[in-house]
Length: 175
Image 1 (tube, rainbow, N blue to C red):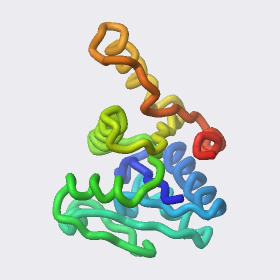
Image 2 (cartoon, helix red, strand yellow):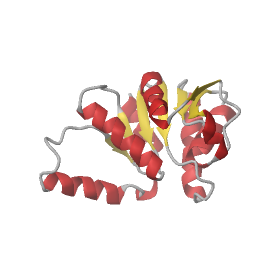
Image 3 (cartoon, rainbow, N blue to C red):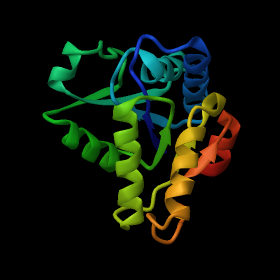
């Protein structure tokens, strides 16, 4: 299975988060899954990719050619797909992935997350979307989404994503 990881590429992330991302990468490789990710060498993306590569797993990096001006790219990918725009990148994530795991990140990660669940809600895909809630990172976001539903801003609350607090829960949801 090709599993897309959304997550930060920041070099400033606390080790408690990147350690979890590394372990996720190890388990992806050990279970024969391919990592699809933004191609970054740092942050959550880089830590997960390192776990994959340290366990002889496969990865597909997808990034605009110019992103290397902002963050270092992972050179260990089995395949690297260069695109022109961030929108094209997200389209390639969808085309090349069977499931999505959202790990802690910033604005870019939230953009990717909300787009993928919106597309699921609009029946443009039916792939699993799992939020990896490391150390309760996303709890405030879940509260906001619940409030939006309670106040009528969201239509029928269909299950567009699952919440996993541990790596084992991610794999339970993936089946």
